[in-house]
Image (cartoon, rainbow, N blue to C red; front, side, top):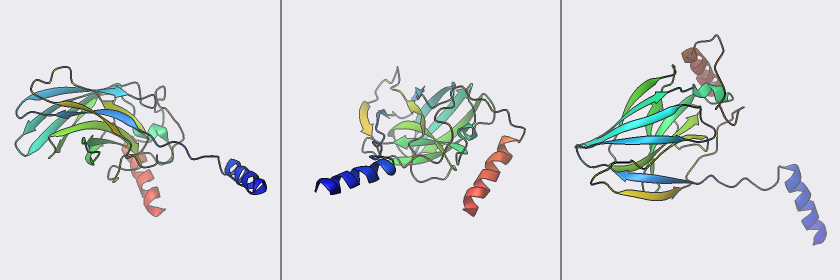
Length: 199
């Protein structure tokens, strides 16, 4: 029995040891009241560019509109590997998630307008191989924070761990990275998307 245990230990060491613990983050879901604009700021993770991200969120009848604005951002392609895009996700108290769309970063500052049918959710931003992925990856760059002023709204802390494995990437953080390539970012993203499709 000891021999079998020793052999298994050696195999585990050769194969990289025990699997890494799954990522779990604490989120603050917000119940957005009708016809009231709530400012939601995002906290950057250690992997994120040294940028700022905030949203103005307003529930309007059947849709909740999310107006994002960012400054001092860097493109997702700086992670290299298979990463081309940032994707914004809404996450509910029950742990369900919805891809709200791509956060298109081509300049240091910009904005995006997204929407969802959800009325209560937190938001995260992940780095992904393309904008149409089905589940958020563990490459989390921004997490929404509880709003400072949310009159008539409920804020609930929830634990979320429903992440897909991170896409192949060369850098663990792009906090200090800058894009110095001569290829336009749109073309770089398109070339990578074509390569992934060929695979």
